[in-house]
Length: 147
Image (cartoon, rainbow, N blue to C red; front, side):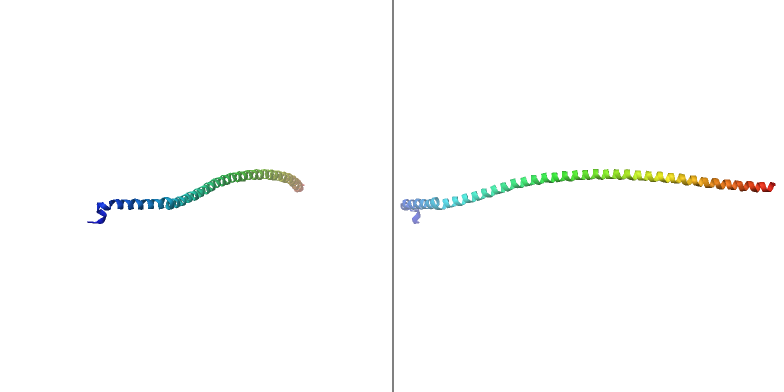
């Protein structure tokens, strides 16, 4: 029969098992577990610190995004206002230029019309005098034949 199964050795075996258990428990409770707890606490505090930094960076990123959105919309509005102002200014200039050109064309046209009137009057006078001369010549020739 095996000695560890002998009933006479049970109390000593129980004693050594209990003693071994308490030794291992003591070593674990006083050395291993506190070290593990310290490591876990350190990890937890490090992770919490990183989470805080990530949260702060996220808030800062949201703030920067908001500011850039506001700046973008402000810039778009400024560009729109500048475009509107430029368009109005160009339309004003175009209107003035159109008016000036219209007046110039009207003035040139009226000058040309008056020039044409003068030229046509002179031409009519020339034609009229030439016609008078022609009639006089015709009458002279007609008169010379009868005589």
